[in-house]
Image (cartoon, rainbow, N blue to C red; front, side, top):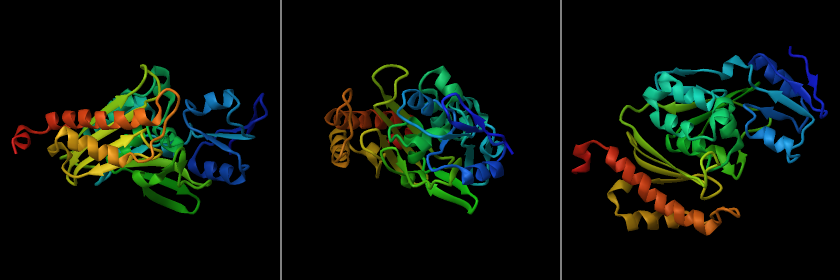
Length: 285
């Protein structure tokens, strides 16, 4: 059992060494307990005084949350996998190259070396690179607790801006991406400056289940659009996206009307990238 440490700012800090120990610590933790993955999002909020907690539990030493492996139907990515590890892992590079592309775009080198895929998913920013990509790939979030394990599709996991269906005693232990040898996907990111959080992220994919377009950052939850989108002309695509972005979010840098307009424009661009990547025989049909 890990021994808690009292920090200088009065927080009780735990670093459990396995999943059972994590469940035990979490079960005794106060309601305001903060789960800390890579800390790239949480620590700035804590340092600015925007997040307060009497207890912090680090997930960095739990081996059950680390590593990448294959099952018969899924690429399974441990929640503690960093963005850099995603870009370098041979299984991810082979079976899900679009996730490599989106991971490489996250923040700067420090953020990619420390930040984790599980932490990104838990924070539930609809425009986060991995949230959009995993939604487009029909990935599942693996939620574990003392009562068992449940799997929730990424498209159902985020229920609002920085809100998910995860309960207090559940831990995101892994992400499962369905294997699809026919899948071709392209990723596009709109940001103000290099290294800044994205304004929009988009993934267009073609696989065994047809075409899908996912747009993150325009609304509180990622938007999913289906059908033969590459077969539409540009005006049809723009109109389809504008009709879907009915309640855009925004801030002082990227107001709602700007995000809505850019979502339509970048949907055309990412679908153009996908069309160019399809085998020539499909382009000619």
